[in-house]
Image 1 (cartoon, rainbow, N blue to C red):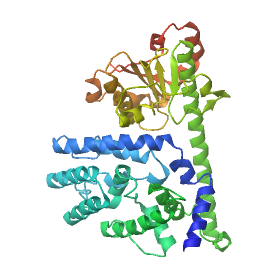
Image 2: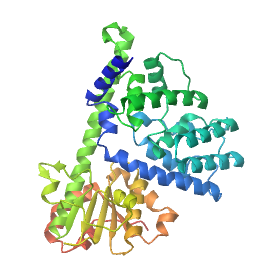
Image 3: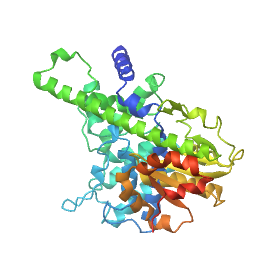
Image 4: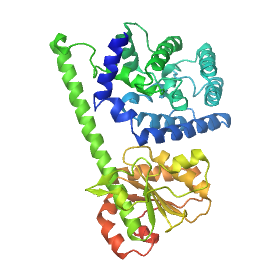
Length: 416
């Protein structure tokens, strides 16, 4: 197995369209998701504790958490389905049954505060013993974002890949089966962490690729005609998904560049997200107008790391005074962008900065809905939004005629 698995890992890493290269490595959206999901889980816990958690999946803080997870695409597609409330079956039974709801909230709280894998496994075993209908190892996809080095994600494709690779017959839906699978994954992860990562997402991605037959373990000439046709369709879908993702990235880069260009023209120091500073758009490198180093903000380390992932920040020239912050949300959760801007606003507490969400025109209804949340409207944040088409159309005019950051109000919109 050792030499064979080594070969499979090499194939997995060298494929530029594998989830290793398109999701796991150098993906700032993946990094942003960890904090957003953690914040979301804390909200779920608090909503259950204070009896604000609803009797349906829709509209709950749990829906936000699962939306953030499914936005990771690929490995996590369909992660929210097991949590949809199915009233005829009364599953998962954490909405109407108050005792089960509280047990689920306490389980999440104990897991988020766990310091080692023994504590997490013990909580899983306690939850399993309650036999809550419909609440199975799909929860592992939430736990992964709380403890990525200890809890691998879990879904049909991953278990199929596991069974195919290890010649096993493990089944979906059982916590006891999940824990057995986890033991094998953790053992393999320890052996191959130098080739992959201590983060179990890399190995889970490998199993996902095998389970969806995007990564073949044998020679494809032995495939039947039906299997070959199916494989060709999978490959074509993968190429299409990659093209769409690349187009999204280019659009995101374009909007970032416009924002950097406007801020620079207005006389501010500007900087892109820490993972984006080496990017360019239309042969215009961000580094030519952006600060080389992030200004010294006196913030807690975790908050500072989140702030550094905000897509574009404008500072008063020669200072660390944030005057405007922009989150470009092409396809990711608008609410998670709001949380990052909220972290910045609460941490600075100077009320001078203006916060902007920059969104595609077809997501305007979504941003209005999110900014209409009572928790957002009751806050003191000056949060507005800008549509892509307006930013693109008026960029040069804003650069030419603007005197300061208030010129952005010409294209910004607010929610009444």
